[in-house]
Length: 244
Ligand SMILES: O=C(O)c1cc(=O)[nH]c(=O)n1[C@@H]1O[C@H](COP(=O)(O)O)[C@@H](O)[C@H]1O
Image 1 (cartoon, rainbow, N blue to C red):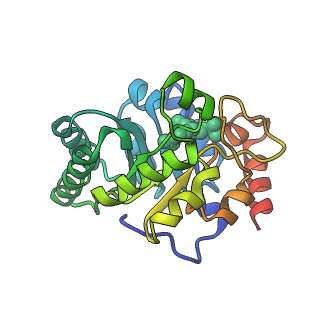
Image 2: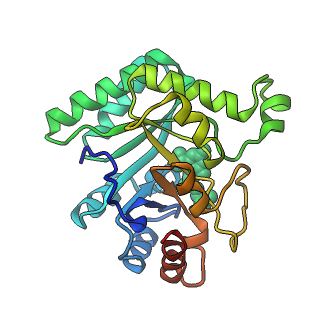
């Protein structure tokens, strides 16, 4: 499962759909509704409520898995959590970049070792740079960070690269900032993606799917525009058409 995006990856294989639902039954129903989706994200809501069975279910169906638990803790705890998560055989796993260099390095090392012991390829640890629900005002006034999102994300990306993790999660608005300092094959995975026919909701720093791919995203995480559409399969197909 350790892979870099191949240049031949078609648009549909570069879209990751989050299973942001409260029960395993609802998650399975969504997976059944969207057989075209090859890459699913399991996040906090579903993992806390339903636990690991959804991961086994997705693996059995041959899907790629992004386990998005956004760990943020001291290095020893991060290492233990990432080692445990790596035994599930997932492709991507998230931690917060602001946990710091030692925690990031420990996370990737522990995940790699645990995955190998369990007979899985190592998961790619992705460092979340700055949540896409935050804007420059939140950064300046609430968090008292003096950098704007572009510079802050770039700093977090340099820290992630330097710490040995495989990539970052960032808004599509900062893809160029990341690529300036993190060469391929460092992975750039972007939520905060909104087709122009969808509402932004709580996302603050967005681009359309086509603009995000044009800017150099390796993968797009697109949730509610697909999963809360009246016809999720049609919404997914419409986004793929726009990317083609
Ligand atoms: O790590 C993530 O996936 C993530 C990071 C971030 O900065 N922003 C963000 O929205 N996400 C996730 O991406 C998904 C976006 O979903 P939608 O806003 O419905 O498209 C959610 O599952 C979020 O948890």
